[in-house]
Image 1 (spheres, helix red, strand yellow):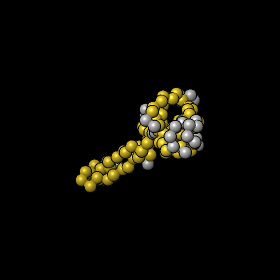
Image 2 (cartoon, rainbow, N blue to C red):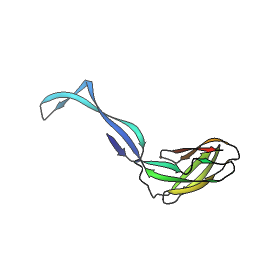
Image 3 (tube, rainbow, N blue to C red):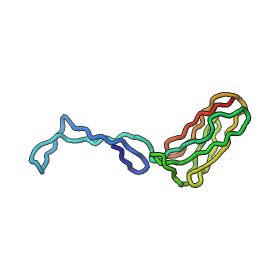
Length: 130
């Protein structure tokens, strides 16, 4: 079962204890203790990078970063995002959940572009420059 607490989505499981018991007042019997275990599933918000995934050398490639909820629906919140590619990081301000930038490279290669923000799952995209 998935459960949201604040800005984090947790996978919740109930595990029956083999060594601990509790008294059930309704039935008047002892029953196994149930542990509730939560593990991090994802953040409630994520970033997505959209655009073409290939471009010629020295040609600007327009890319869009979008803020989405954890299920992929668009969010209209402003957010400061750090975009990294080729060892260079820029700060991008999302307005109503959207921001745009151009990527260009003087060399042919495959580049990983990352969009990151506090308390969000990162967006990652590979771009091939030919």
